[in-house]
Image (cartoon, rainbow, N blue to C red):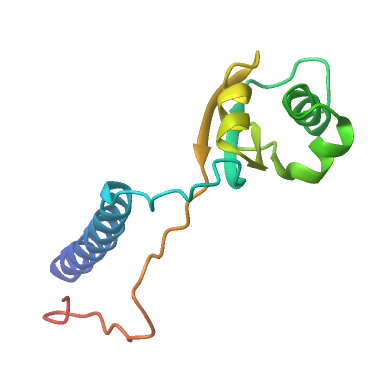
Length: 137
């Protein structure tokens, strides 16, 4: 019984290590690739994640819109650019911003970091994985 539990535990640990290392390797590969060369149009907007301090006396979304308005010039432009407000695990928002706007918003009070939005693919396709002793590839 104890031997069976140990084997089960070791199998689980190996699976966790396998998945963790696969995700880490793919994320590292994605991060190490050089970004595509920007087009000659430097005003092209792209989605960025803007991490902010937690607002004290204001609703997070209103705070995010106010921060964007300071850079974009109006509440309407801010509402159009805002894609999502993060309020639970992190405080911030995603918005479509040009490189110049990214530079400007990075200088705003309460803005901690601005990073381009990235999508990671965790597996390469529909290939089925059969896990078990000797089947980890």
